[in-house]
Length: 272
Image (cartoon, rainbow, N blue to C red):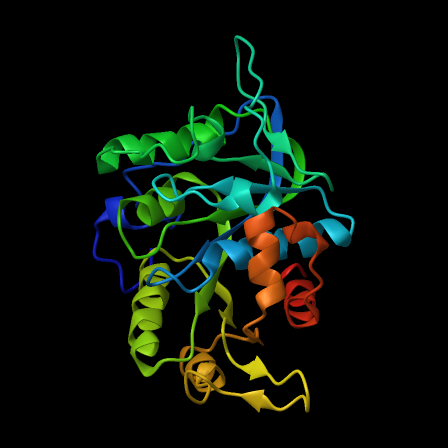
């Protein structure tokens, strides 16, 4: 038991001798997921799903069996980025994830809706239940790395994921604005409360590279990500430019064709 323990097991993922509540959800007998990494953000619109997709791409390119669990139930965008529209197959025991062209396995609420524009108007407990079912009721097979794309903020779904899934660490996606440093602090402190290590920060929209001279233009101000990382003791950071080609690929469902040298180096570090 940590000396900072507040004896509230419902808000803690530590596996200590004093634990009285266990919210973890077991895998089914058809799944063997070895490592689970959460991708989070303190606020929306920072490119978290794009970073999740690119990290999965890099893991797959490095020869790992890779999957994405889209836990953003009310705003799922992972299938669109990969150009996947087919519905998951199922039998009497479980559902089967859909595979992308390069073999990344996906499960997302948008794959279960009649139309991708249908809203999911559910209350928090129902949404949390769907996330747990994506983990326990899907036959994932053998997976080396699963990335969990979480909704923004520190609400029901991140809490459910931290408590129910064997998350080994999280990646926090942010942007350069000063306001975001406060939002990042909330995400870091939630992870600390749940005893989940922060593997690294990804600063998206860090700069725009001039197509003529190559100068890096800081549209949203100077980056503070290294300073924030040092403050919280986070070892790895990546800075991604504003790149119309990446946005276009996500819209067209061809995200697997994107090469991101900045994120490739970052991915190799966290996958260690």
